[in-house]
Amino acid sequence: MSDPNRFEPTPRTTAKRLAKRAAYDKKTVHGILDEGYLAHVGFVSDGQPFVLPMIYGRKGGTLYLHGSAGGRQLRALAGGAPVCVTVTLNDGLVLARSAFHHSMNYRCVLVLGSPTPVEDEKEKVEALRVISDHLLPGRWADSRAPNQVELKQTTVVALKLEECSAKIRTGPPMDEEEDYALPVWAGVVPARVAYDEPVADPRLASGTPLPPYLRKLKF
Amino acid sequence: MSDPNRFEPTPRTTAKRLAKRAAYDKKTVHGILDEGYLAHVGFVSDGQPFVLPMIYGRKGGTLYLHGSAGGRQLRALAGGAPVCVTVTLNDGLVLARSAFHHSMNYRCVLVLGSPTPVEDEKEKVEALRVISDHLLPGRWADSRAPNQVELKQTTVVALKLEECSAKIRTGPPMDEEEDYALPVWAGVVPARVAYDEPVADPRLASGTPLPPYLRKLKF
Image (cartoon, rainbow over all chains, first blue to last red; front, side):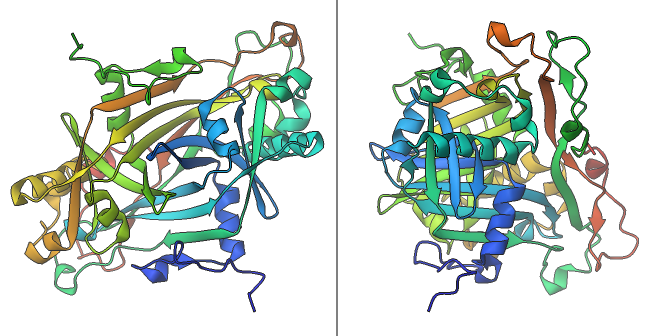
């Protein structure tokens, strides 16, 4: 019987190398998706893969993506063709004594599947809220909501989280035993996304304060 | 006659929407590739796209990727199938007054093509140096060079920069004229990759100093 807390590995999501870096439990997969904000979405057109950056949001077991109804990207995604959504968090550079053992600390999720267009207006608006609040919690309630024309210009697709895997590398470098004595600096340089001070729009209505959810960003 | 400073747009790299965000000049494309360090590489296997994070390096008009000779990823790349290499720099969140006009400031390069394996040992070592020095200039000379066994375990592929495009968004949000009066904070939250203080390997040979190229990282 399948474990409800775990994604069932498939031949396509089973790591053949470095199996110890793979994870399939939902808590890990959801955690990486929730911490990230930028996905790289792959789809195939005439045999050629295309990979494009997109933001996204997760609600339960569903990932939402959105974009312009007129673009070829969303047309491809809404057409039901297979996609791969990859979210990578770069946690640091791993510097080994040997060039060969250099690596990166990262957490990465792959989601395979075929998205379906979200046609129901209520679900569509909710999906847009989920995407907005994923990027910046609190922003949706603060912004002017989309009108009918804007909703028509926006395509939203839903991708079920069913065929998923995570890959994680953490910790110091792993060198060959005989290399540990080398006088080469080795260790990890932690990396993260940082935000700098918000820059107000030159046309900001005067007296508009910086909202609290922006003050909470990690600078 | 084609312009040597510019990539010739093809139907696959011609932006149909937001054409003003597209760029094809080599200086821009090379600049984004050189500033980035993480690519998302798409390839197709049995009709299913896969997108995986990889580091890379550029030398002139060639992009180099590398990985384990035993992995399916490099086997796929070395097999000559079409790939898409995407490098995205996230420059900031663009907060508009309307939910609809929220966006992201970014610089992104797409490279389409079919990689070829690098078999020549001299070129292979040079490609590994290029990848290493791209991530962290100066690191290669400081590390123990790969030996014959390690070189055999590493596959390197070269991808010619021929079918490329860049897409760039900069500047403040663009709202509907009637929304500018709304008392909603609008502007840009600049984003970047930040490094934190390097963490030495617990087994670092005693007395090994932090190398100068690590002190230059932007914290």
